[in-house]
Length: 116
Image 1 (tube, rainbow, N blue to C red):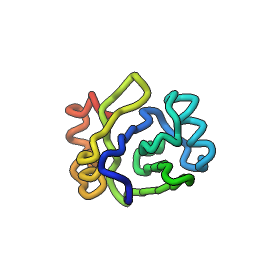
Image 2 (image 1 turned 180 degrees about the horizontal axis):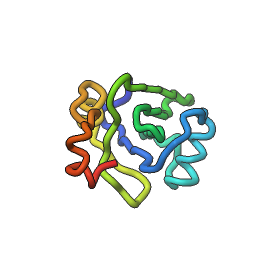
Image 3 (image 1 turned 60 degrees about the vertical axis):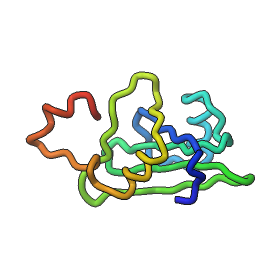
Image 4 (image 1 turned 30 degrees about the horizontal axis):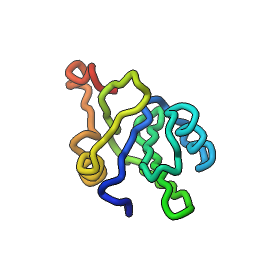
């Protein structure tokens, strides 16, 4: 992804319908997260099945939408009641380049009770 390393990254903590378009995701950022979608921050949205991510980013007068689907495993993030989770650029980059936080085995489900 071509975003500045100083961009702030936020994950919407709820479930997102992956059929949502750029306009609908921008409205979610504005209304639900109460942030400006054109702020230059990167906003991540995860599917109900936890195997898909959409990323919305605004730069130089245009929106960009990325979509990532895992063949195996799930994206696992900490629980958060505030509606959003702030990620560092390093954590985001590591998340996209590895599968360390994307696989959950049935044997480890009890350990991951603080994650969803």
